[in-house]
Amino acid sequence: MVMVCQKVTALSVNMVNTAGEAIIPPKLEKKLFLSLFVGAFCLISLLTMAMWKIAYLGLAEIQQDLPLLIGAVLGIVFLFALLGVINLFFSLKGWKFPIPFRGKTYAVVNFLYPVVVLLGKVLKIDLRRIEASFVAVSNQIVRNTRLKVPADRLLVVTPHCLQKASCPHKITRDPNNCKRCGGCDVGAMVTLAEEMGFNFFVVTGGTLARQIVKKLRPKAVLAVACERDLTSGIQDVYPLPAVGVMNIRPNGPCYNTHVDMEDFKRQLEEIIEKPND
Ligand code: SF4
Image: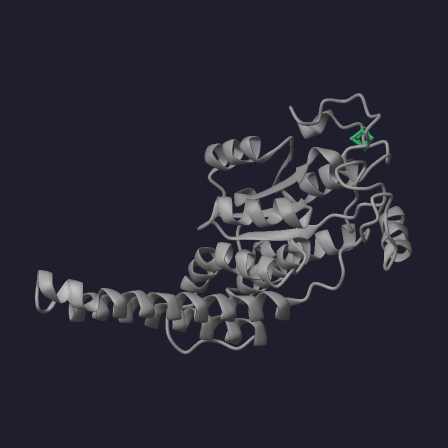
């Protein structure tokens, strides 16, 4: 199975699928999201400042100190957001931020994400590129927290399209119904789940994934999906740390997809706590 995946990975770089999209998304460029994120931050800051200035006289009429009070609150929020931006730079460089603010970066990134998308739309940047870049940035932030969880507190979810379309077995009810025939990557994932001890589920959509998260209450999530599902999933499960692994789509979106099993295993080994850790 690993060999099959490696073959798919090797063959598919720079190729397009039947839908005309890259089988493996182009290099995960963190810089794209970072540039848009800084742009979104500046935009929101300027807009807030302009609104405060416009409302200044009106606020002063209500109460003399009100403009300064609101200005001070906005200033504090700005400062926190600025620390989030600086921390994001540090995270992407692999440096440690010198104050205990690291966890909040995730909050600032998620908060500004809709503005980033809006800015990308205005600049006519493909949404898929922005989403892939967001996943790369988000993964890096999680990685920099040196996240380690016991295997039984890790939830791994993959979409249904990873299962071979012609497979008759109902693995969404229970992945152990998979007969591990080698027809798709699910068999190898079930085996890994058994060996490493993590919780593994194949889901039909976001609702089922959310239900499983609610039921299992994991400490972290690792998801395999396309950039769109990963982006919404990472934001859905926030503040739970979530790592995204991009799927491979040799047959177009949502049909007989694959995963780079070596990358998948590497990510698992990074997150799962070893007994002597
Ligand atoms: S590996 Fe499992 S899920 Fe995939 S085709 Fe075989 S039996 Fe079906």
